[in-house]
Image (cartoon, rainbow, N blue to C red; front, side, top):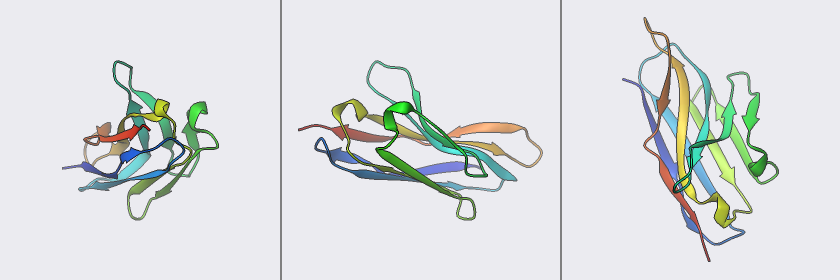
Length: 120
């Protein structure tokens, strides 16, 4: 069974930093894209960054120059380093992976979500 386990998050003052990590476990053929989405209260879930297996990233303009990311295919992990955080970054952050399993098609899996709160 495929699982995405997130760690990190928490509360920080504006201008602070937080790091999120996500690890995929289970038996599957490959991970296609892997990344992060977020959902603020009363808003739609939105893309933060999604990284293809080759390393090409698709990301939101709002996080450019503030967030950095890395993906380790061997470890099946993706990390998100968030700097210069603002209250607008407050949201539940979800790890997402598109995974090809044995005998199955490509399926989107989601982590349980981790809260990030930016407040003075």
